[in-house]
Amino acid sequence: MYKPITGWSIEHLFKFCGKIQKTDFHWLWTGTICKRDGYGIFTIRNNNYYAHRISWFVHHQEDPGVNFVLHKVDCHLRLCINPNHLYLGSKSDNNFDRTLNGTNIQQGSFNGNTKFSDENILDIRHRYQAGETQKSLAKFYAVHKCTIYRIVNNIRFATVGDKTKCLTN
Image 1: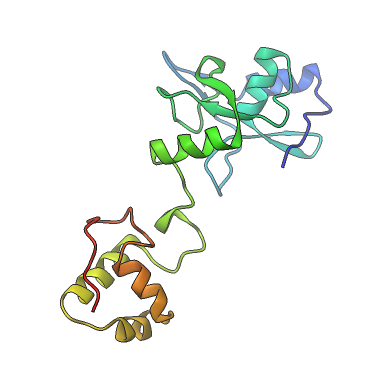
Image 2 (image 1 turned 90 degrees about the horizontal axis):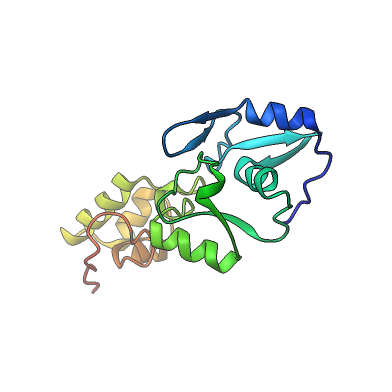
């Protein structure tokens, strides 16, 4: 959800600039990092904003508004806030970028709500291919057998391991 950047002052500018480590190519955020998604966070009057959105705001002197601030093709480093590496886009641009670059952190074992590690997924597929039933795998992992069906047929966790579909009986 869009949150307007409010309460900005010259003190915030100095604080923001003090949390940037410039390299030959990237400007790396050294301040607070969001544990959920790995992006930099900057706080203005108890409101948290993504650091790359603030970078856009500072260097273009405009609030990105409802637009997403995206990283260009040659820079998908979440902590980079170099304004030359950023552009404005839509939600669909962001989703396309995330899929294209494999940075959709909510997929597979990168999703913090999953019950399975990549090793679990590979184990389930291997055991199923070796003849174990979906029902017994479901019981072992304490999930519904439909979950196992989706895993062995690459409907879920398709990005883990071999993408060749298992044959179901």
